[in-house]
Amino acid sequence: MTHRRQFLRQSATALGALSLGPLMAHEQWLDLSYGIKDYLRKNEGGPMDETFWSQVRQAYTTSPQILNLNNGGVSPQPIPVQRAMIRFYEMCNEGPTYYMWQILDQGREPLRLRLAGLAGCDPDEIAINRNSSEALETVIFGLPLKAGDEVVLARQDYPNMINAWKQREKRDGIVLKWINLELPSQDEDYLFNSYAKAFTSKTRLVQITHVINWNGQVLPARRIADAAHQQGIEVLIDAAHSFAHLEYRIPDLGADYYGTSLHKWLCAPFGSGMLWIKKDKISGIWPLMAAPQPDSDDIRKFESLGTRSLPIEHAIGEAIDFEEMIGSSRKSKRLWHLKDYWTSRALQIPGVSIGSPLDPGWSGAIALLQMEGKSPSQVAEFLFSRYRIHTVAIEWENIKGVRITPHVYTSLKDLDLLVNAIREFATH
Image (tube, rainbow, N blue to C red; front, top):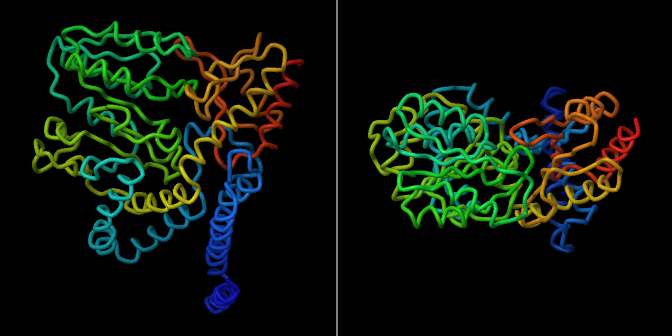
């Protein structure tokens, strides 16, 4: 370790001041990575091990000027992911067509294997793309539906998906069967029956949002999927907020089609996502962007995007490394602990309620703060103007509150500040 540091410092001096920053940042990350791995060889690193999580926090470069509690929108990337992005971008600029097409473009297959290992599925069922919307709309617009075919979905689904289905309704005459969930709920029978009762002989597909982005509600996706399959209905799962957040493998959910973003809970580069389609379903989906063989059973037909950001794509590998270093199970438990930590304290404040499930079987890190007599926008404005706490006000289909979303770099002191701010506003 000492020899390596000396070498890096000598190299930085030899190359000049402009090289010092990147080399020293790389050195610091190597030391931190070694420290985290060494710590985990000797300690469990459980959800309440603040020594361990303080080391993880050092891998992020988040601003000290604001407290970011809107990680449900987009998550920041740890240092190794940022550095990989910059490194690959600089490489491409040395000779774009050579490094992009002959070097980086050849690395997609190893990356596909890595993602499959993390997701617990066949690599030939994974396509790499830009976000959940692109992945899910590939399926929504690629399904061979006809006039009169029914699709079951919820009013609490994500707007991009709702708009995509409405476009198919207007263009092709399909029928959208809406359910309207009363949330939060920890009643599995209620959540299941809300979907199952909407199924008819004309239903061709049900869309399930695994974790509802507005308030973090987890739905019983597998139970709904099994019931749908018993009636010959296909299943599309929006997993934008569950992948690398909850502990599961994609086949566990029983889906036929599945889309997620990697720039949320995996902390991969902004604009990275993944589409999963069950092997025997691939040939039946038309690609969103034209491919040489649109009816083939090769998942790669969904990657015919033209020129893309290969630095973004390849830096996903560093995000996977970081995820595996921490451990998916360890991370999932920590995320729930952070939510439980602040919600249990906030609920002791008069006039405060939480519009999200509190049981770990029905929730993860996301929780919805509600304050009696205060609108969501008023609460969010106070938190930011007074304490520079960045959140998001939510008002959408029976769901109102301020979404609070910590991540692995969030400290308990950060959440103490949040609770103190809520207490102040409650008596304001």
